[in-house]
Image 1 (cartoon, rainbow, N blue to C red):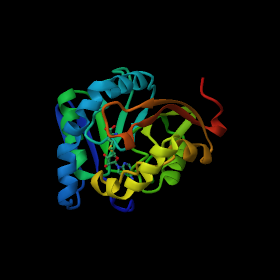
Image 2: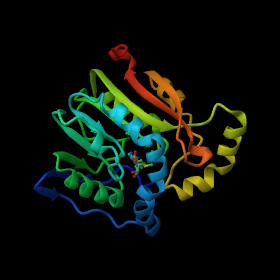
Image 3: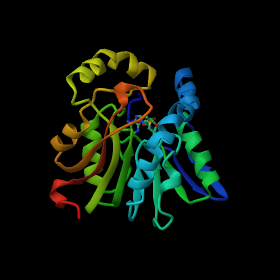
Image 4: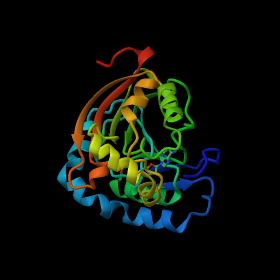
Length: 238
Ligand SMILES: C[S@@+](CC[C@H](N)C(=O)[O-])C[C@H]1O[C@@H](n2cnc3c(N)ncnc32)[C@H](O)[C@@H]1O
């Protein structure tokens, strides 16, 4: 994954207009291919339950909402239309292009930002809801990303997440460890054995998560956690 010191592109998208303010850097061939195969690869998992999970989680988003690592925009259809502002950050140019197209097709106002989760271009305590689905497995520095999320959340704000994680089963965790390196190369930086709930707690987030399965997907990415997390100093979520 690219270093997170690069210039950020901010694309504001309305049903009729889309303006990109900086040029994107050149992208690698596999990054392009990955963006092309991303939706078809996930399709069966979406149909088998992930789409429902997204819908149920995102129905609870409130206020100024920031999604990190928005990818091709699979979450866009599930946000309440009543949100006052929806911002989607995505650092990979190939993914972002698809995200911008999907947002335009959805015909709703979305601000698309070129930014990594480790360096969010937002003021402290300026966001009500942060959303992360299948992203904290991929960021290079999850502890820094979680600190950034805690920084930008307003008091009482929440991180809503669906993440695939390291298995509690010793046998599956062993398999995840064995396959971590080739999977990371295939899946553009995804760490299939990352203990994300533990990292959240270590960052001082109060985590309220349930366990689930990403049905119809490879076993090494099936264990899911889904729920919400609140910066500890903000107090427990309602
Ligand atoms: C597995 S995809 C998930 C996409 C989308 N959230 C979804 O639910 O389908 C992981 C996404 O994280 C993005 N990503 C990679 N590194 C990142 C970083 N440091 N900060 C934020 N997003 C990142 C990737 O470009 C990719 O779009």
